[in-house]
Image 1 (cartoon, rainbow, N blue to C red):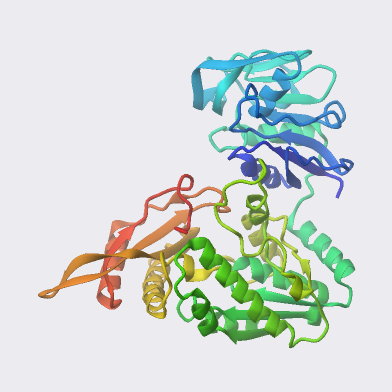
Image 2 (cartoon, rainbow, N blue to C red):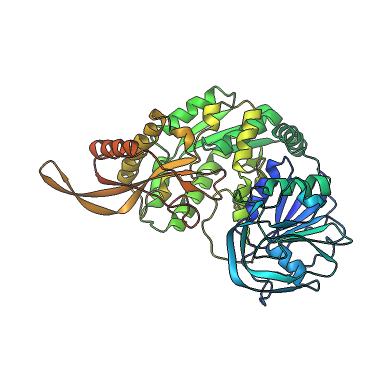
Length: 509
């Protein structure tokens, strides 16, 4: 693939959004940390420098060597990237008198500039910076200004290097997609060939070449990612794919049986394994979220290894890893605080002796669904809400018991079935219930109760990178709350989570 776009990540919360916008233009791109620039740049048509929480004036600011890039490939520098080019190329960056954050408008746009083709003056852009470029770098040519930022955009004469002090990747920049298209297609000459069909053809060919006649074992979860991975592999290697669906005792109510039934009609070779007791035993007494994740991950590997040994001559383990998993597991600034460990990133223990194959590793969640549609997977299955790998264990805050799992399964079932009955399920990206480690006073009949509290969570998102809580109808919430309290023994209070990501995560643990 010779039409790639390289995105250098300087730590911005928006870097992944840049990648998503580029992919929406049917152009393939990859994100690399700024300090790990690929040695071989021959496959890249252009480079985008991301924003950053750093100031270019700080001693510890990211300072990569761009000598192999500048003047050799078209460059679009966004926010920090624009300030970086100015600061280290003869310009001047100073603190702004007032921090510019939020909506602004381009009051001046230089005529006949390719970067701003089909973008008119007064176009809204999104600013997020406390420094500002006071003087342009050597050979800098101003392209656009806002009422408060003189050098909102510029290019460098003699090279295809462009810089902007706003974020074209966020929806608040109304012509952001047009600007990215101008840079990638008109300036860089990148082909818009990244389509679901092209991905399927390329990936099937690559899988056949890589795997040959070897056998592959895949752990199915019932979710979109593992299902699409399975169908893609089945298309490539057919009967040499062996799927195992493990019941960890932390699935939704009746999910083990219903998912196995769904797979029967898809031509996949699937074996169901009920290891509920083994997982619950491994979780006994654990309350820390990371410890729970690791216990589940380790137990899954043990169960999976036992089952894989029943299949002779297995060489590969397939995983449904997707790009956000990969990105979130790579730290831009070296060792950093772990938000959460990903159960399907980071390789395997030595004793498994299997090679890893991850056919969806470079796809975002919405791209996975589009590829699934291309493969002819049932719409209902592709529309399923994401469900965490550790299952209900991270929706039960504190220690895990069989009784807590029973309570949460019942609550979750009422909530999810209610969303379906009210035709709200497809309007929500992800929904679930959380069992809180507190009890509250209640009254049922003439008796005082002291029972569990559950929180309901429903968000809208595209790929889980950011998410907003869904404003569900009060009537629906009222009915759902009443049904839960009346039907689920042990619960006497229901609350609704109205936090967005960021700052909150979608899951509570």
